Amino acid sequence: MQRLFSPWRSEYIESFQFEKSDECVFCSAQKENEDDENSLLVYKGKEVFILMNRYPYNNGHLLIIPYRHISRISDMTDSERLETFLLLEKAVEALEQTMCAQGTNIGTNLGKVAGAGIDDHIHFHIVPRWNGDTNFMPVLADTKLISEDIKKTKMKLYKYFKEKL
Image 1: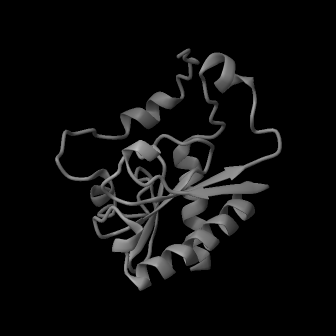
Image 2: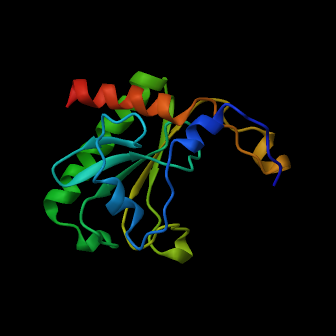
């Protein structure tokens, strides 16, 4: 894979302490404070929370995750499913209002063979899309361009959720 030199990202990379842990990354993330600009946590609901994807497909790529460490939709309670879908709706609205998203992909990968990078804690992806956001870079150069610093995007979305919910 080709790499594009982007020295401005070093500040972001250096802001995180990566420690080996047996704890699930999502279980760890839910303990953070959403008003901490170094956290990727955007919003804490009653039973689920919203987190920026550390390895986004596009700018603003969000994850909605139950607090409980479960891996299947059938393990979710009715209230977890309801809050998940309410936050999916709000996340789409937030991406449209703060980032002018023109479309959205929503989905989940259930199990390793379905593409789940983290298969033991269910999570739902919300990926904003724009007309013309696909280009030759991923196909020809195996490179994905992300146009805005993740912390800046996180703070925009955090402020939106704080005002609206």
